[in-house]
Length: 156
Image (cartoon, rainbow, N blue to C red; front, side, top):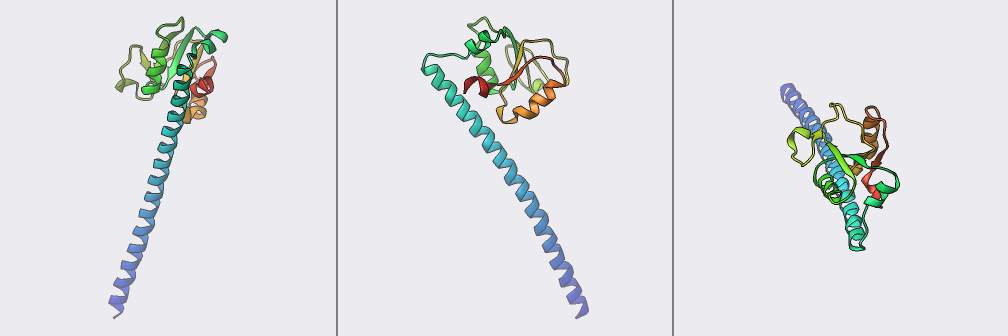
């Protein structure tokens, strides 16, 4: 009888422990999914605002001209970064390079560097990864001596 109680006790402890571990993993997974959902919602809303500007016949290039930004870099070279690059094709704004964590995996018409590589001097760096702007700005400020702006600030 004592063996049965001991086995039952160990079994229940194992079930309880497994439930706690599984619950923590599930909570972490849910938080990660929420973070990604917010990121994509933020990007969608910003891109929607950008489309509205275009439909009104307006452009974001006057922001750069007004601030004297002629040579820029773009942080975040996925869809939004490449859309921004295309925005400047018929303007006097020169996109010198892109910066991205996945620099070796991406293709673009411009060079793309990782944060670990040296970055040449530009007038401004535009961050397209708007949900992580504060963290990215903090890292960039350690490497460059130029303004760092969020694309969201420019568009909205």
